[in-house]
Each structure stands twice: as structure tokens, then as C-alpha cells.
Image (tube, rainbow, N blue to C red):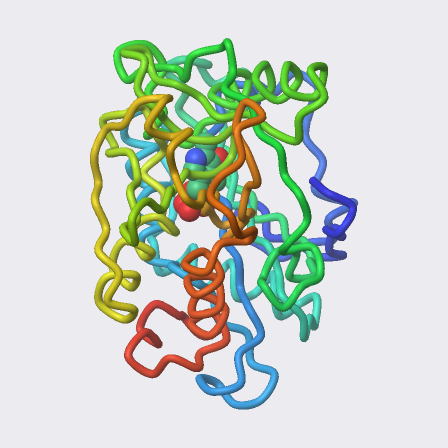
Length: 312
Ligand code: PMP
């Protein structure tokens, strides 16, 4: 978690809001079998009234958590509505009036069967964060040099990237460490067929000849909530065509613009891949337009998109 994130005093654990420092578990826990979600709530002026917090994409995030649990045989033991109330309770207990990051986590309880466990921990830790990468942030236009990783993205027939499990991030860690060792800011994965896949913690979108192009779910990507929303609003609200299709490394090099999208990354432009710069302008005009519109959606300023926000 970056330094811009600050752990909150209260979290929710196994049925109640408690102090985060008291959310303790045994060293024996099989946490490596855990799944999670990463969700953000933003301060929005127009939905709940000034200063109200709204969760972005609650439903698709919680649906993905349920799918991850089904695939990995974890039983959540609470309803989706109870999880929402748990999350609201934890946010409110902290009294935050700022943006927050929420990370529901589920894993088998130690000693209850590991791969066929019967009991599970369900925890909702919270962090406070400053919006890192919105385009009104001076960091938006910072140079970000990326490299195509020599590690391939995990594939659906081995460790499915569509499940948001901690285990998958061992693959991301390998690629990130390689990028750092080589002096780059981050890595882009190819999938096991050699097509462009995604970043280590975000999906990839490129812009070429005025069109946004992004790899399909079958290119070993996490089915990103942000990507799904972008595909919708870029075309419908901004009139920019979006193509969801496979593309090669060389086609990536030929892009005029490229950016990462995800809950953590929001819309983050990247300058180059493998030292080949994208287009003539950085950050590119379409990336900037998309990031601007996304910020407005998050703040509840786009009336037609308010149903993507869930009031805390
Ligand atoms: N891909 C990976 C590997 C990720 O870790 C994330 C962050 N959850 C994403 C994509 C973006 O997904 P989302 O928009 O649902 O946060």
C-alpha cells in the first residue's frame, strides 16, 4: 500500500466493527488461500449532499467477490446486503470525510480444513487515501516508463486471473520486481498466447487513431470493474469508439496513447513501453478527457452515472 494510504482506526471483522489493532488472528491462518476486493468510496457533493461518501461500483465489486468465493470454495456466510452494512459501519465508525479504500478479505479459518474449510474469516479493513491520480493531481502527468515483462500473465487453466485471490499477486510481484530491477516504473504482461494482457494491478487501454482499444477478458485479465465502466462511458458519454480485442506487442508500440485503469490506478497515463514513446503528446488528449470525465463521475457530478455510486 503506498504512503498516500493511511490505515483506519476501525474495521469490521466477523460480524462487528472493532478497532483495527484488535483485529488479530493466529499465525497459523492459511491466508494464502484468501480472496479479496479493492473498492473505493469518494467524497461527492451531489448525491448525498456536501461531503457525503459514495462507493463506486459496489455491485460489480461485490458480485466479483461472490464469484471469487464460488470458484475457490470459500463461503462468505453473510449476504451482500450485510456486507454493504458492514462496510458502511466500518467507514462511519472512523468518521471519515475523505476518500477511502475498502478491502473486504475472506480466508479459511485455521484448523477448519484448509482446502475444504468449513469456517472463514470475513474482514473489511479501511484506508484513507488522497486521490492519487486524477488529472487535477500534479502527479497525473508524471513520466511513467513501462516494460513488457518476461513473466507471462497467469492463465485461466492454471490460476484464473478472473478470481481476485492473493495467490495471483505473486505473479504481479515477479513482474514488478523485474521492472524495478531494470529501472522501469512498471510492467505490462503478455498472456500465455503472446497477446497483450494487463498491468500488475490494473487493466490497460490504448488509443490509436481516435479509438480506445483494450484486451478482452480472455487475454488473462482480471474482469476489472473500472474497465467495464470505462468501456460503457467512453463510448456512450464521450462518443469515443471502444474496441475490445486482442492486440500484439508491436501494435501496443504503435499506440498514440496508453493508460492503466483500475480502482487503485484510476486513470493513469503511461509514457512509453520498452522505451518506445506513445504519440507526440503526453498525457494524451483522449486519456485526459477520459480521466476528467471519470473524476466527475466519481464526484457524483454526472447525473446519468449516479447509479454507479452507492451512498455510505
Ligand atoms: N487487474 C489487476 C491485476 C488488478 O489487481 C486490478 C485491481 N483490482 C485491476 C486489473 C483493476 O480492477 P478493478 O477495476 O476492478 O479495480
